[in-house]
Length: 494
Image 1 (cartoon, rainbow, N blue to C red):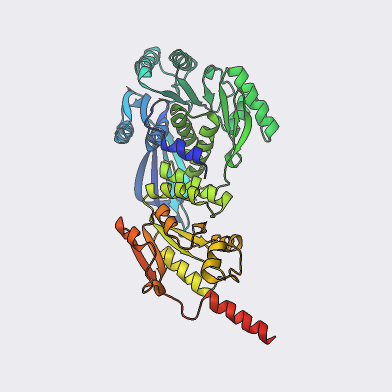
Image 2: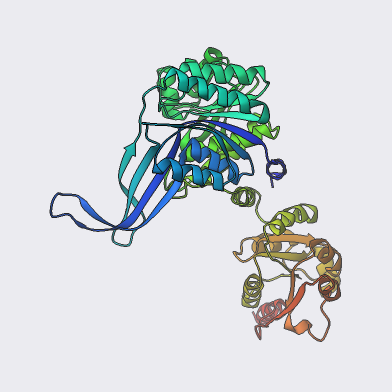
């Protein structure tokens, strides 16, 4: 398991993050699209429900709040119903909205999406309607935004600019924001707009353009590592940045700093909807950097968060628990299920924090048969995480005799790890599993019903802290010893 990533997530704390940018309201109208209109060749949507979510810089604020940060919002909204809905939602997630300036005669930027479900298939966006103004703010409004920003700057740990080119983040505003942050010793992260002129971001700490935005900004296509490097180098030098993070969809991200130039890969995804992925990356970078994280680790975590987000429909947040799940899953995919006892205990601690039930059993599992499979299925039915303590070769010889095991401990562990119902395998050499049980401290200890009269080792310890001991049914006529004896008999006859 990547302990550094997990440790970083555990120590994010609650940084105060300033979000300056284009605050929007996302509106989703869901319904059935089962017929074509007789009036025009368009689908008819029978609306069932309406959902609202924070969009643009509001989406960044929502993502920050989900990661445990406190969003401090600076931007503009309209004097309208959508503005009231948006501010209510931001207030509900714990954001500081005192820096939002209400501008008369200017609509709150909103994106209304019509989502249809046809022939019982997954949701599909049919149409989007935008309400917005991209006119530049007047001088008094610019002065007010700068005043709101400067008043809050001493109270925050880091600053985000989220630019959708809706008239707020002009060159003047960006210059004032960046210079003030630099003087205050605060990092400033920019999610730029799709624009060929990035000069207004000069002096920021880091910018996070995607592949298309980068290509437009540098004037050439970027399709391979040498082109990523060339583009990132140009942006760092031209804009006097600490770092550039180019997000590269399924490839991952390209990180360029003074001392590092590399692709940080991500796991391939089933992309469902890219809405909000850039917001998730920005908020994760902001939260991790505010917590004192280095750029490489911050980008690794941003990759994970952005990847989870694109597997969801619509503009959705990503929880810390989901990120932990993903790190654990990626680690298991890379390193399998076999663990030393010390590493196992560390990983079980993460599962416990997520209220997962730990099930423990043990055995020799020398020659796998139907009885073993049914037994392990039973173990899985008792909780979330199944840990198998596997008797090592020395232990098996002590219990079964000098001719056993038939299969060595490495082979036996590999076979167990290949079973879907087993989450972890750890090998022990003692004659009994009591010491291992005391380390694992399972919620549920499972043994076969044949141990009822012999006495289950570890019962007294597990029950002392409220754990349970469960006896599993036995599949009659199935055991490793019987299988081995049958093979010997057949060999003797041949």
